[in-house]
Image 1 (cartoon, rainbow, N blue to C red):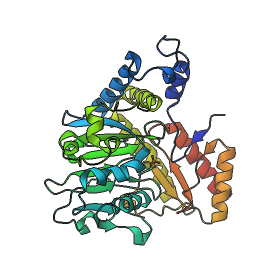
Image 2: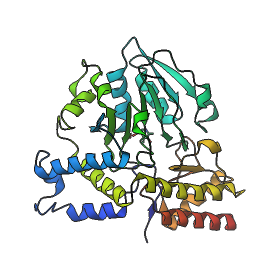
Image 3: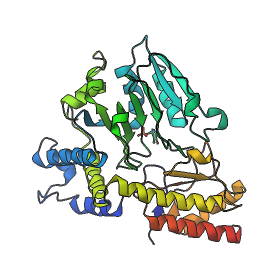
Image 4: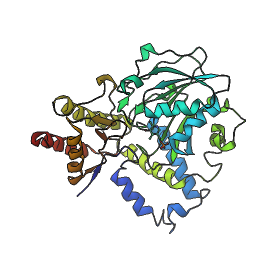
Length: 360
Ligand SMILES: *Cc1c(COP(=O)(O)O)cnc(C)c1O
C-alpha cells in the first residue's frame, strides 16, 4: 500500500523525483558513476548546478538583480548569517514574532545587536499572524525579518507587510518556498531550508539582491558572507552536491507541473478541501484564526487527546503517516506541501469523515 507522508519536514518528495534519483544513483548520464561520486567541478555537476539555478529563476521569475545561492547549515544557519552580514552592533533590526521559528531567529539575532519585535502573537499561542496594522517598526532598521509560513502553529502571511523605502525585507520561507507566486522585488532576501518543499535537509536556498549582499559586513568568516556565495557561484568549497542535484530534479518536476501558478492552484484546492471539512464539523476544530491559516501545514484538534492518539494510530494503519502535531501545540498537523498529491488529501478527508462517523 502506498503511504502518504504528512510529515512537516523532512517531507515527502514527488514520486517521479524519487524514481529518477534512483535510476541515476549508480549511473549518472552514462558516466557509469553515481552523481554522488562526480567532481563538483566536472561538467556533469556544473550543469546540474546551472540548471537548478535557472529552474528557480524561471519558476520564480527572478531578475538579474538577484543571485541564487546554496548554503549549508539549513535555515537555522541563516538565523545567524543574516545579522552577521547586515546588522551592525550599534544598529537595530525589526522582526515579526509569528511562531517558534521566528522567535528562534530573534534569539539568534539578539546575540549581535538590538532587535525590535514589531509585533507578536505569542500571547495567543501564535494562533494568528500579528496584525500588520499594529506593527511598530523602528526608525532606522537595518532590515525587517518575517517568517512567511509558521510550520508549527499552522499560520501563513497571505499578503506581505509593506516596508519602508530602503529597509530590505528578509523572509524565512522554509515551509512555503515555491508553493505560490510571489514578487521577489518585494524582498531583499528570501531563504529556506530545502527539506519542506524543495529537497533534502541540510541545505538552504538563499535568493538575495546582489547590492544588499555587497553591502554586508566584510569582517566575518568567508563562509558566512553572502558575497562569497555570489562571487564563487556557491562553490567556494565543495557544495552539497547531492542536495543540489535533488533540488534540480524537484524544480524540473515543478516546471513539468506547469509552474508556480499551477502549483499554487493545486495547493489552494488541497487546503480549502481540508478546511472546509474541519469548519463543517463539530468534531474537528481549527485553533488558527481563519484569516491566518496556512495552506501548507493544516493544524487541527479533535474533542480529546485520547481521540487524537487514536486518530494518528488508525491513520497510520490506513497508510497515512506523519500526522502528529508538534509537541509544543499538540493535536494533528497535516503538512501538505507541493509534493502531496490531491489523492493523498482526498484519502485523508475520507478517513476523517469515517473516523468522525465512528467517533473513533
Ligand atoms: C523547518 C524550519 C526551519 C529550520 O530549518 P533547518 O533547516 O532545520 O534549520 C526554520 N524556519 C522554518 C519556518 C521552518 O519551517
